[in-house]
Image 1 (tube, rainbow, N blue to C red):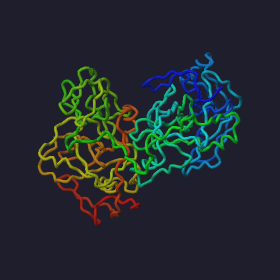
Image 2 (cartoon, rainbow, N blue to C red; image 1 turned 180 degrees about the vertical axis):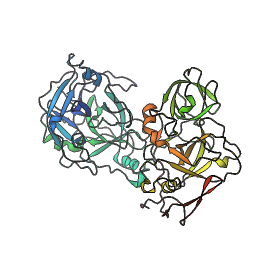
Image 3 (cartoon, rainbow, N blue to C red; image 1 turned 90 degrees about the vertical axis):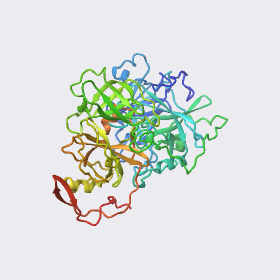
Image 4 (cartoon, helix red, strand yellow; image 1 turned 45 degrees about the vertical axis):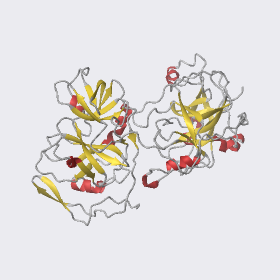
Length: 564
């Protein structure tokens, strides 16, 4: 049977579920009965996959092959678990007799991430089980070409993300190595980048939102040429899943023609069909990075994500728009209210009213402000404009730089003071300063890339005689032109502005797993400056019931990182 030619040619236009038998070379790799990776059938007795699937974590030590089985001809993981496809003769379970891992595989640069699985017995080719064509070393996959990745991996990054039960298909664009390297060099923490090696191939979109994820490793990236499909790549790794400016990184299969030929009998390496396609886009060292779709305000204080939730017989509750169909707000606003049919959300610019479809309380909801959160699902999605859009949300390990410019935004019930807009302006303090002043253990002050338990803000203008009406507040911080909801404050204990906030990034897993389309963004600003740091905590005195600070070292600035 000829490689790379499915017997079924139907497509599911615009969908993510793959049609049955559309990708007959796709296999599912199981370890002790649990699906862990994908692979591609290249002959009756061999599967090619990613090496890291078969190594003990963070080592180069192989896992014994008897721990693995391969399922060929599979479409639905659910059907497999229920054992319904066996009677139809669609799939077959095969033991793995041997695993060959590339001898130059490394953990340092993650290069040569390729493995061959020898099946304990050959499989029969059917409508549902067929081999994929392998490219020769001189095969050219043009930059900008459309190819397809398939797998049963997570549908969102980490957290409580569900996996695809039906085989998922995703169209991706080939990204040239120069452009891929340029994108990975942009906005990295401490200028840490990923080296794109000749053994690697990049595919995806600089805008993100589409790409492989955990559980897709080892699966195929295939490209069609003159009606024949070739295995261009093997899903290897990425920075998160489908993040902006971070295309997926695959094994460049063409670079391993000789290695595969020397070990496998029966694999097909057809000549590339003519005409040889030319690159559709230029591969350049100078790339244009994609900017976030969230967090852009026409002017500070005019927040397009401001959401006011109206419920019967109670004051309005203030929250923020975090996705086209999701609003984040304090859960305590809605306790005891059972009928949501009359609830609605008002959004800028003209107080458009949208009904609420469902209410999702934080899985660990309590009255404690760290967990006092709810996500409200809107009945209809919002069309984003300059005046209506989502705020950016921080991922885990987001480090808001000391001296970052921030603003207060109303959160929950209550009326804001309107005396002076400058009273809402704030500045992020360093982790060490925050922990010192608030009496936390300075010995456990988190370094950048570690999650703090509290955030602290100081204000540009002193408070005079105004009372802040007992409202709670969100802390918005700006990075490279985009605004992030950095934290939320405790309920007020007095009339003064809040100094301590709970980092919203600590709730990022719950938010992302509930509101799948929420705008979680990587850190945009890593502009560290070498400045003096506080060697001692500031002394504290009390004035009028509130702490005031007396400095005991020469300066208070950005917290140094030792990396200049």
